[in-house]
Length: 215
Image (tube, rainbow, N blue to C red; front, side, top):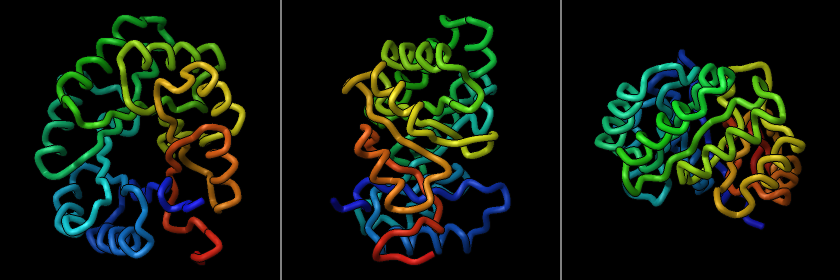
């Protein structure tokens, strides 16, 4: 298995500098990972650095809480795409989900999906804030919205991906949506376990360790 085909290098810290983005993109090209995931302010810079490669640029929107209104998410997504983003990660509105306002959750996601057209959309569930039934319901809504990926976490809450939750997500969505497991996956051995359970993408920091790369 070429683990790097599944890897998404992530740099979302609020104190991220231009130098951090440059280093991230250089390492991404060196390891030839699938994608980088960054805040929208740095998409144009990443596009300059990666335009001679096939590495995807993923921009987060409504990040990290998902509580911005739909129009703002759409504007942010379209701006990121104009600057070179090739994938969009949006955070599910947890408050609406917990309020059982499922129609509004679906509309929020669907409107973004429609607005960005063929650009792949990941929906971040923030699983550490949800119980099992809420995770299942969120997955069902994502199925209805025809999103491309479900992502486990933002990295800004009290926990990240777990094998148990990835099993729950996979059982719910089957092969209709891909899975991105993110946060807390620190080495190749752990990443392989998630891939074997059905994760298609593994979000990691630059400290991720493989047999061919030291921290």
